[in-house]
Length: 367
Image 1 (cartoon, rainbow, N blue to C red):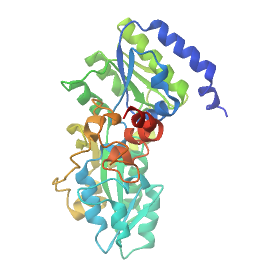
Image 2 (tube, rainbow, N blue to C red):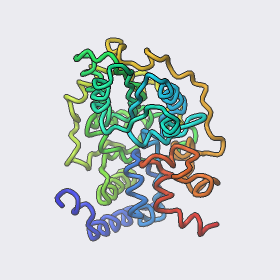
Image 3 (spheres, one colour):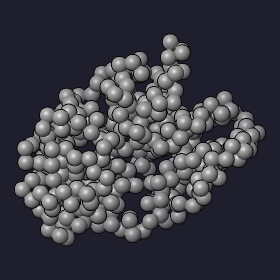
Image 4 (cartoon, rainbow, N blue to C red):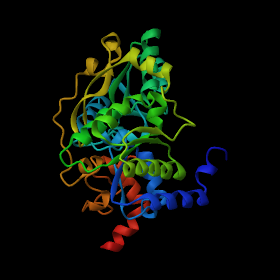
């Protein structure tokens, strides 16, 4: 299949690995900022194929995972109301809140519905005028334009029983927070191609220059990731720190301008709390005052912040890249995809989910 098979070619992968090995002279640590890339790395064993001196570190690349517990608690509180239909993408339903998850609310009578687009939630609102319909809007810049369109259409069409509980986050401020952390040991980054498809690459250049860290925009197939690693190592070995785009088949330098314009029309930048990283200034999107009528926080009140996380779960450390899922004593035992203690085991892009699916046997053998 064009644009897929050639990026899974074994001979091309071997050639890339040989070149990486040939230029590597010292240890380097590279972080991927995408849960999809994490799963590809685990599925293909890329981290095991690379030279021992190269460590791949998993960052906060899963938007479901970085959504803080207080947002989940607020969604649960709203979903428990008898006059509300709460709509969400499916991977949010099993994210643990302080005392329950949305799937449990649904099982006890709450009207919680899985949708595949925020516009589906808008359709549900129109079909149920006697109920408030709330869409749980989470994600990186990738999903923000579609959510912005839902808010835009709700306002334009006067759909008064529709609102959104917004928890959008922005990637570059999180990268800066990681680089500013005292325990940071990351030498280079693989930037998420899908985010850059929307936003372009310009906002990464100041980070690369200020922190002297190379950033390579790459995709999700094995050859994409290996090419990203190769370019990152080449920069590190040559003392360079620039932004490179090796995902040119999808990413333009200026991104998707119409999508950005729509985001700017509907959302404004604000401080956002990230699971594991805390409050990061200018790292999130919230609805502008002009869209207050479709803001669920305005209708139902903001999250109160009195959230309780499972004390055993180390999801916060995993999202900061300082520990790996296999370091957790509960991994694969008390914590499984069927009975998750933390969000990184729930999400289809979570690091714990990837390790459980592709590396669980290694954990069992070690014990």
